[in-house]
Structures are given as structure tokens and as C-alpha cells.
Length: 195
Image 1 (tube, rainbow, N blue to C red):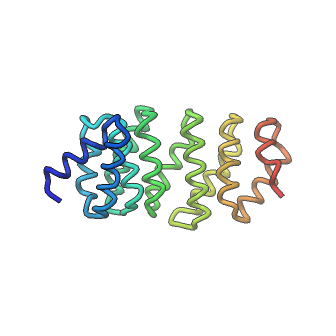
Image 2 (cartoon, rainbow, N blue to C red):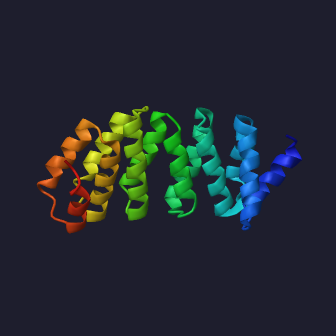
């Protein structure tokens, strides 16, 4: 891979034309971990726009390299501070794929936020991490259980979704206890299938 080829493929990731960005995805996938340095440069390239940077993060998610964690965390923190609805979900996906406690800590931060979509996404990603028993699984589970105490029904619903995905004995026990005190009909509906 030449530098010119790599830069051209980064530009193609930002394209609005599906065949163009899909071809760029295939090219990066074929490069494998060798593409990581180029993808990390793409995170800092504002010319790629939010959509291009989101696609870079999705590729970094597929690589799941611990060496990319500092850059992914940087993009995550920036997107979280700005409430970026495009880059933040990609950064959350990339963090969830990296088996590191710092990645989980970042996702736990989202649970304290006000955006229901971001909170839900983080809770589900954390639930998957708990189910997979990766690093930080205990902290992730504890954070989701804590979310059950939120005064916001949407946050409690997110906690239920995350804990259902985790499906550990502790998660199921927390859901059973919570079911007895939950008053919101939508959250109760989510709990309906719990045995």
C-alpha cells in the first residue's frame, strides 16, 4: 500500500456514493491491521467530515486493536463533549470492541448523559461486554445496574435492555428485584419476558 493509495481510500470513505465508500471499506478490510496507522490519521482529518470519521471508527471497531485505544478515546471524548450524533456512535462501537478497562470506563460515562439514544446505545454495548466477560465486565454490569435507579424511564429502559443482553445471574437477579418496584408501563413491558 502506498501513501497515495491510502489517502485516496480515506477520501473514498467520506463519499456519499454507496459503491464508492463500500469499495473503500473492502480495501481497508483487505489491508487488515496494517491499515491502522492510516485509519488513525483519518480520525484527525476534518476534511473527511463526520460521516467519513464515523466510517473510520467502524473500521477500527473491526480491527479492535488495543494500540488504537488512545486515538479512539480522543475521538470519543471530543464527540461526547460536542454531542456529535454521527461520530459518537461510531466511537462507542469502536470502544466496545477493544478489550480494555479504559474503553469500558468511557462507555460508562455515557450512562450519565442526558441523550436517551446515546445512553441506550452505551447500555446495550456494555451489556454485550458483560455477556462476553471481557475486561471491565464487572464495572460495566455495576454501572448498568445503577442505571435502574434513574428517575428517567428511558434510562431505566436502557438499563433493562443492557442487563437482558448481559444475561448473567447478577443481571437477572437485579432485573427481578427491579420489576417489583418499576411503575413505567414501557419499562414493565421490557421486563415482561423475564423469567
